[in-house]
Image (cartoon, rainbow, N blue to C red; front, side):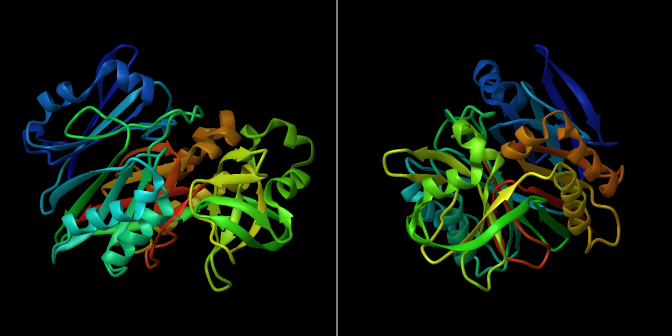
Length: 379
């Protein structure tokens, strides 16, 4: 596996890394992560197509761009991958609203399904999709046997619109699936949060899809405001600092759910993923040191099954973590690089939702407020 990275910074394209003997004419896959307004202005597809004539080029908007051990805003980061023993296939589906999420997942799985399918990377619109329904359908269609990871596109902290494109400049309402094929490919995963939980665990008693109406016998928004105290006046922005931990069933591993919006009239909260009735939830708050440490633990998990260092690492973290960490944001990328070592090419983005198994042996799920890491190597 060989890679080539370029960046659009301060009005020009510059090379930032290249593996020896990389051939642009043989690259099969290009992952492009960029700030939404920058993507709209630059329209980078034609330039990238001129560099990589046969590659599938996947572009999405972000809430921050990652490469190496650093975090950037207002840039475009392009990573071309030349596999030596792995085949790549891609597919794209359109989505108009979150009710089509499960159908989109089914279509992607059907279009990519093949006997030698080893892994699926998902790059999805982050505004119209219900990520948990998308991933549940993908898991079902692949019998929970295929490694699935990726993320939902971002739009800084604006939440106006997100863009995704396959072999075209990115647009709203697109979901791209990338299939990786062949026994030579080794895949690792890690996903960790690092948030502190507080208060008792409570049952979701009224919800619809990703809208939460009641927790126990109280309106969800009223209870949430009680726990936020002085921060309640800063809603909905403050919601990113206080996500929910959710267990779909008493036997489930907890996942984190980010609040996207609130409805003062209905006393409800809308989340980035489903919160089914009967689920158990707890409030969460930031712990700066634990957030950074969690990134290191995710990196350790992602290389647990590797006998040699990985060749490539995709980091997808949450916009909420970036807002909480502020000037310390780079620390979570630096600690991941320290664990992964100098060999792998690192790229990634800050997202509206992270797609990953919790560990190399778990089925895939949608996460919020986590650092997720997917590692790749060829035998």
